[in-house]
Amino acid sequence: MHALIVVSHPNPASFTHSVAAHLAEGVTLSGPGNSFEIADLAAEGFDPRFTSADIAAHLREAPSSADVTAEQARIDRADALVLVYPVYWWSMPGLLKGWIDRVFSNGWAYDDGLGAKVVKKLQHLPVHLVAIGGADLGTYERHGYFDAMRTQIDHGIFDYCGAPVKTSEFLLPSEAQDPSAHLDAARNIGRNLFDASGASRRGKAAEAA
Ligand SMILES: Cc1cc2nc3c(=O)[nH]c(=O)nc-3n(C[C@H](O)[C@H](O)[C@H](O)COP(=O)(O)O)c2cc1C
Image 1: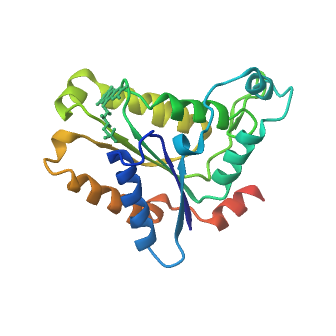
Image 2: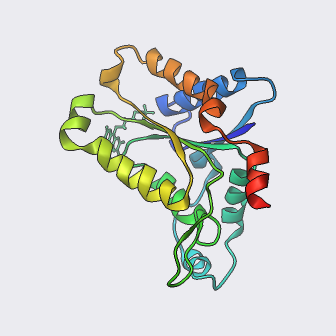
């Protein structure tokens, strides 16, 4: 089983990257043969700008750009998709949002047939979300930020494409005095990734058939 761990943070020495690395370590510990790839969007220089070429692909007037199809191919190679990101303005960073905007395209992530019901094309792809915030739990609860983010990201993006969100975690400073507790939590998410995801390559093949 293979996990694609997408990280969006410009600093490889950041806590966010450390969380991703611990999650990856958990995947390795989860069983022989389980593997991961870290997609470090900042280091790889992914361009998040949605251009006229992306619009043309969205309207099915042109094929998707090569950088977009390359991202889609590496998601297709994965049995589970993990996003690890810092919370910026009660959402994901613009770099990651641009990755979603461009890569989760009409025709690949979903089919928006004019007038017809949207076809959800990522039902085989379990998703795990790890958001790292700077504000405390009380702030998130008081203002409804947990619900707002889950509505927007878990439901608005992934459910729209049919991808089941298997785990959705917020790692907040107030929840652990010792940051290493969050790193342990990340390792555990990795260790349980495929138990929780319930997906297999066979499942994917069966769906495709
Ligand atoms: C531009 C920006 C916006 C931020 N917005 C939020 C926010 O809306 N809510 C929050 O809890 N933390 C916010 N933060 C704090 C970051 O989430 C926090 O610093 C980060 O997750 C810590 O991880 P790091 O050390 O890997 O950067 C923001 C930070 C930046 C730089």
